[in-house]
Length: 411
Image 1 (tube, rainbow, N blue to C red):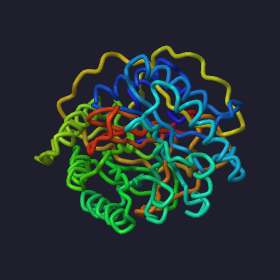
Image 2 (cartoon, helix red, strand yellow):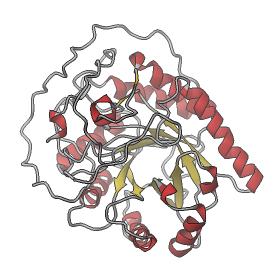
Image 3 (spheres, rainbow, N blue to C red):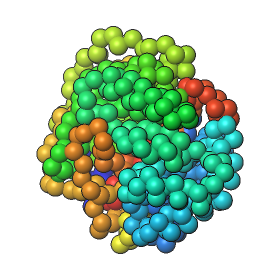
Image 4 (cartoon, rainbow, N blue to C red):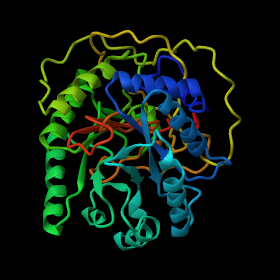
């Protein structure tokens, strides 16, 4: 089944496939409009066969280079192509020797940045061994995900994929920013704190046992996240997400919100770079959209590649008309219960389901593809994004965007 046929709470203005270069280019243009500096895309390793995360990332780098944009990899440690630590070592060696040498690959202070998902698959001691084999001189920057501070030994920084489980996301970000800095002070080595911002959350359509909704509240939850990121003194900001439709965290142009969240991201990213909190203000009111997601008119698109049996994620997009600024967002569409469906972090239909997650501060399931812009990060089942003050220098305030593939069906 195509992901756009699922009862999602919202839909992109035009459906797309992540293999379409025009869609990737549109995502890059939208990210730049939103003040995002880079995309972080989920990656299953260098294997090309049945692995769109590799072929899509190749396209993303080339397209990003044409637009002065940047892209980085979010290594999926539980990739279906990784069966041992040797496989992880080989993938990282390829990443650093090939992808990280591309002019569009994200670098901070001259060092390529690599994000990791589910690094808890291995112990901190194992990661020390892996890093000593791959990067003994520590010439790259490794960012882990989650709440286990012990990983800050072999890793250079930490971010939380989600803060949607909390009704006080700002407080959570401040608390975790303090914990990362306290760890650095105690261990004698500063670490990078990457704060996560989200517009809301709604994964009811996945059928997960722990599915829940965090209302967007007309942009107020998003503002609260950004204010928390600013107050936490975040070195970078991660946006979860650019296009994670299955979890309802997308900020890309949609039927329900137009380009409201792209414009709001531009406003809040600017406030972050200036170190000034963004006023919460009154949440705009508007007639709620119908429960059923409006069926968007599809533009002509290239024929989708035949599905494969092996899962593979990738960034996806299709060309869209010029964005028209929208004055205010509509309230989040009412989620509709749907048959149980498991979210998989791959871009092509895949039989292997992604483990479900519950709303806790530790881990929240996501899809795999990210957009990066500046030093603010955005996570999504398609892309994450980052925003930064400057791309080439290590800055205290950066914004990154995360993009993840919307689902195995769509990929």
